[in-house]
Amino acid sequence: MKKLKIEWKHLDVAGETCNRCYDTGENLNQEVKRLNRALQPLGIEVEWFETKLDDTQIPQSNTILFNGVPIEEILDIEVSENYCDSCTALLGNETYCRTIKYEGYEYEDIPAKAIRQAAFKVLGIEETKKAPTVNSGCCNSSGCC
Image (cartoon, one colour):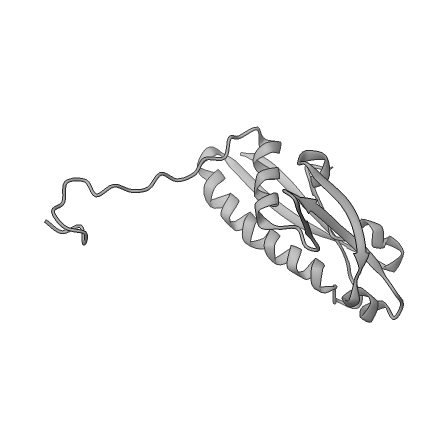
């Protein structure tokens, strides 16, 4: 089975992380479940793991790598930073954290759509949309004839 390895780097202070990293982690967890449902029938397994960072590694925090490649090198994503109230509270000093600009919008977390698009692009798979189901010959909307 082919594997896609996703690494999520984020700040960890005594088991806690900031709000934006937490949101990215939730997006990643849910998206990996969806990706595995879609890709396992194709012989592809998606695994993810986290790398916990300390306060000296803030610039690397809230980063996702696909087989070692950062998401911003896979998709058209611009990386920036802004003031992070949550990290400031966790660390006790003014902290600026990573943001991304994706599809014309600035995000403090990495959205599920970007995670999914990067995974498909790294795997060289065209993402398909499910076609609507058509009622095949039944005489009413409940599907009963």
